[in-house]
Length: 173
Figure 1 (tube, rainbow, N blue to C red):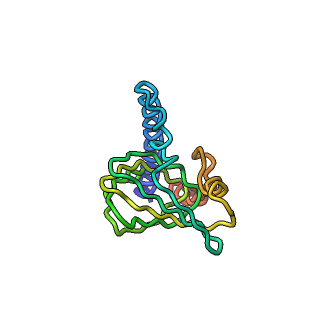
Figure 2 (cartoon, rainbow, N blue to C red; figure 1 turned 180 degrees about the vertical axis):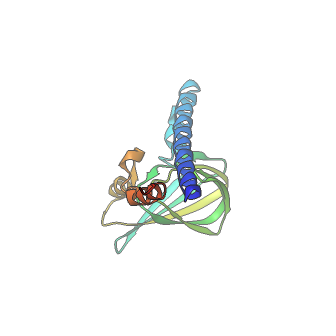
Figure 3 (cartoon, rainbow, N blue to C red; figure 1 turned 90 degrees about the vertical axis):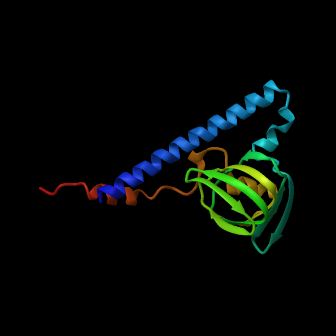
């Protein structure tokens, strides 16, 4: 119906605006680090080195455990595949295109393909992600489960959903 179509288009516009804001945030972060001679901190602030990271592999699964220190603010990579995550310890705020969520351990959820997050760690967090993969090294997994640009996300929009919404607006002769 018309209401569903409006909600869908509002969601897509919000998604577009959120992604633009994240891009602007990353750019401002880079410029701030350059101006204040903190370039060495930039990889951490861009989610490239979030803290103490350990890696484990088991029967086609990659398990990544990250301990993120209190006070850290970062931008995550763009996720290319759906996967579960678990917050075992701590508290953080996660900003996504769906809004702000303050999370306290214990907590678990599903990261959807195409997700990118801004995060602020209120109390040291232990964050675990699990990924289905046949890769054998953390670097290979990273290349499989993240992308550099939203256009590379493997989960495509189901165009049939849009067609169904549009059909509701077509007038029969």
